[in-house]
Length: 436
Image (cartoon, rainbow, N blue to C red):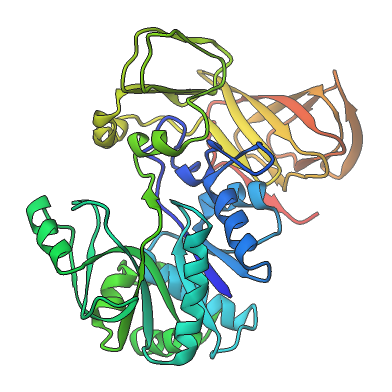
């Protein structure tokens, strides 16, 4: 089974734990079978591979999320990075071209596209696997999976099937309705559009070549920023005459707001939290080193991170986006391929950061034009390279790196570093990468 997981979007809806780099699928609020905390993307990977150990998984994502995926999944999946965000049709097209031209997937093989962030059980991915058999029958060019609605929702688009069977031809698609219109759709046995599509790889490539002029994956990548921003639904699904839908009646939740996340997260509290006996239906997540005490809180979500603190009634949590958009500070916590990066303090002409690296990981060899850096090794051991000179570093060592110097560090053990950045211009854009 070839699966493309769509991992896009910004991190506004689960602020302050999510940000423009750390989207909701990377927040570790669930637990795996051993009881360890895991994120949504880790949970989805685990579920897919428990259903199909041989599944080939490719994650379509933006540059800003690639490091977090590498951090959490390592080399277990392929990552197809978009040069810029262009909506779901260009993202799926780029991934399909990658599968064909770079990974060598045959045009007759089935590809299933799924979002990376639904909260589901294994039955969902067992149904995803069934799509492969439906595609093999070649009774339709495009096969969708529709979720049986549990209530008349205004948040989802609807698929109106021609019949009531497990697999039906599609009569039409409906945009997100108001509640009364949604009730009428339910009377027609309508299904929620879950954004799950299955097709022969050759079908999509042929369709794409009729819509976009490109030769292969690398040519498409070079032209990507000029592609039209359009969803896969609008570009392909709603225009395809040969289309069918498979009904899915199992559990499915979109955890797009704190209210929904609170229903499925593993624990009511995470982090340094004290909650008294008068609190009811309240979840608290604390990523700070400061304690949080909650008393008399009812139907609330409280979340604290280096990006900020949220205190909200659960019902109101779905309306926070315009308020979060007023906050313009850069992300204070970032997952990198080698570990994590947490901003501790920001002053005029200086920024202090805690770097945590996993054993065996290494930063890129890079330089900065406008800032000096002072590294203090807090714990662990590693090997630093500054302008080609190697040096073993241990707990207590201090390195000063002048602007313009090429540098990197490799963690021989787990490694903690306090980095002080000094300069009149401190920016994430001030970075040049080099080959070693």
